[in-house]
Length: 421
Image (tube, rainbow, N blue to C red; front, side, top):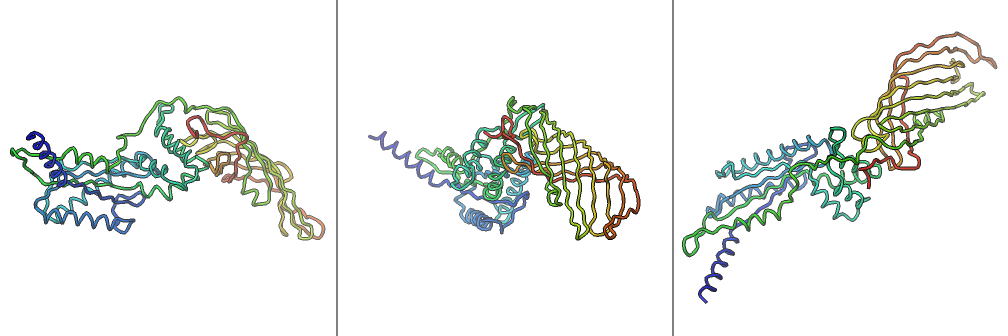
């Protein structure tokens, strides 16, 4: 009986001590790319006011003391991995400095080893929780598959490829990624602070000291979501440097706006190489207004694709190439006209960047610089005749190509293994 009463008494003491321990959590959010605290942003003003009130109560109540403060900071997925890691470190340092400012204000003391500061980089676990809980996010299940099963980093040809982020950006042309960017990413730029305060000493029957370290640690585990200390890196054979050839059709929207119908084809050869050929044709005229808008010609080229995007999905990302052009033309808009009825030739170097719009559509921006040469005539429309004025030779160095091309991948999606599931 006495033993039972003793056990009950010790349990009562433990409960009493546990009641003296308390974990307070403060969460401060940051604006994109910043590590400074803006009190006017989201609920920061109320959170900082609560932190100030907590410090004030500790200062006024001498029976309580702060045992430890755990600061965990995160960043959202956009941007480069190392940039996000440094950003989370700066945010953690900012919050530590903020808390130390409260300590100085109220004359409190806390040893440096009482701070536990962790910079977790990208808050993947938080994003998974937000996506899983959403009922309105587009393509939620497919995005969850990417977040859960695509490694954050894959090693390709000795280089790190950020496969998870690329797969997120390319899913359905980036629609779910843009949705998360607007609705979820601001919630991931956060620093969480768990402040554990306790009554320093509480004696039991025989003068021994009981503490509730395990109980408090359990509370801390429940309050904070833990992420892996570093990105998951795997040597993944499923991200290959080659892919089966396929064909894409395209049209230059700039020519379409200029009323010059055009069509092209690009063949992906594998190993991030492609070849292309384009043709345009316009033969408009309006005799009453004496204007002519005539041209036809074509282009062939070869491209090398590079960058992280091209490793996950061919015909996207950066590319450089060589091209050659040939065309004839007759342009006259009611005044002096220019006729190149013999071939005009051009060639040069190009640079471009293609972004995915959907599973099968890309938008490719291209600019080319090179050399153009060819003979042409100047003429004036007089009555029903076109009077020759001069024969000239064009020799030009500068921009010779501009494209905003809509590209349609035929018959298959342009994903490689390791991308969309």
